[in-house]
Length: 342
Image (cartoon, rainbow, N blue to C red):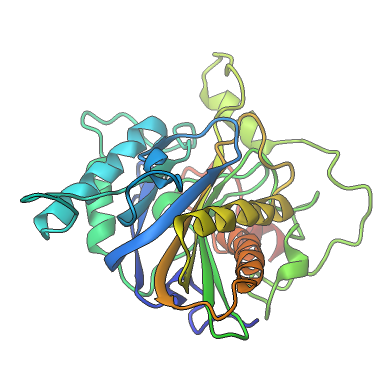
């Protein structure tokens, strides 16, 4: 397996990704779409998810294909980004045909970035407009780090962000991942000079910082993030830690059914567990969509094992790339790892 030419999820031919963000808001939206509908499913393993239209992605539901997937900041407000994408698709005459009517199908998931230092004093929910802008910006190349749904993302110790990575299997099948990393847990080992995902790095794609040689790791649950958010709460006690989430999409050009996509999403959660410690906590909303463009027939059903494994590898690498490529901006609550380890 080797990374695709862009090392992005858009190495899966036919997929496009667009970002839109508001720097003052410290939040944004990311949209994955294609010229034609694609197969998708989902798997949720966090205890506090926020999502829209995910039930229709279950293998036993009648909808076969969808038009776009949305990752957004903004907590529940961010679900309106899906509405903006739906309106943009409707303007193009796209969507599921119901007689003469067309109904765009746009599942989405959100992360919590309402206490990250940005100006959230809006009069009108900004996320529908951000969703439409992100959809209209969709292309084969797109920004990572402090961009799109990762614009205001935080990890336990350093800034989070938007990440992506890809792999091309020996069979020619391409697999990619796209992630907005905003977890309870840490993406870096104590000291913020190494990534948990370091064993999976390829060609220095997230700084080449190497593997932490310390042992007994994972027991320190210190969080600069929670301390900073508590300060912003202005004395009000935060009710719990439901202020997090890693939301992602894994995709392939292999011809997968909805059930096989769901299996890919399930396996890809291992990629979160390998790159974030701790992961899948009660206060995380960890959710992974899986998509197939159905462009390449699978020669052997056993190839699904390699595809699901590649999805997990891509997601671990994408999470680390999201954090490595985060940029410092005015009003940040947390430092970037590049400021610490660079």
